[in-house]
Amino acid sequence: MKTFELTPKMLTMGGVFYPTGYAVLLFPQADQAQQAAEALENTGFASDAVMLLPPETILHEIGKVDGDSDVDLPSVGTEGHTVNKYVAFARQGHHGVMVHAPSDDDTKRVMSSVQNLPLAYGQKYHMLAMEDLE
Image (cartoon, rainbow, N blue to C red; front, side, top):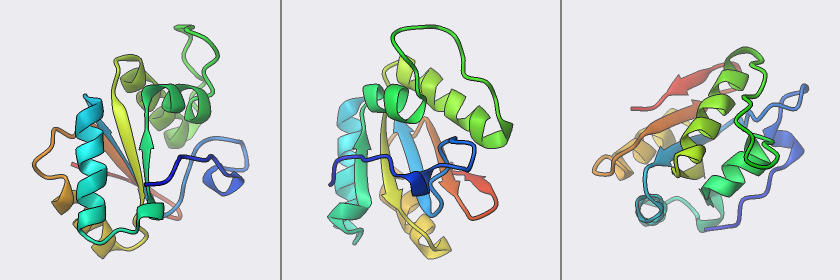
């Protein structure tokens, strides 16, 4: 696994988190996210394609939340609404995994890898649309 690093390619022109080609998965517990990351690597995803997202990273890097404020982010379309959902889950202590899964086959492999874990929320970012992962 590699350390999460927010890059300009992961943002829309308006600065909202939108990492095209990635899936973001949220789990209630840190150990579940760790198990998911290991399962992804065990099914062939490269270690540098898988990143753990602790709640602090979701809040500060992705959600741009400063401090412990309960103020929600402004919703800028679907991607802004999704970031708000990530923030809400992170405030509840959820941990995430982000994996580069650009193809539909990669997405199927992601979901197969984590099928026995309690996925709380998941999104796949396509070029022009987001897909709910269940």
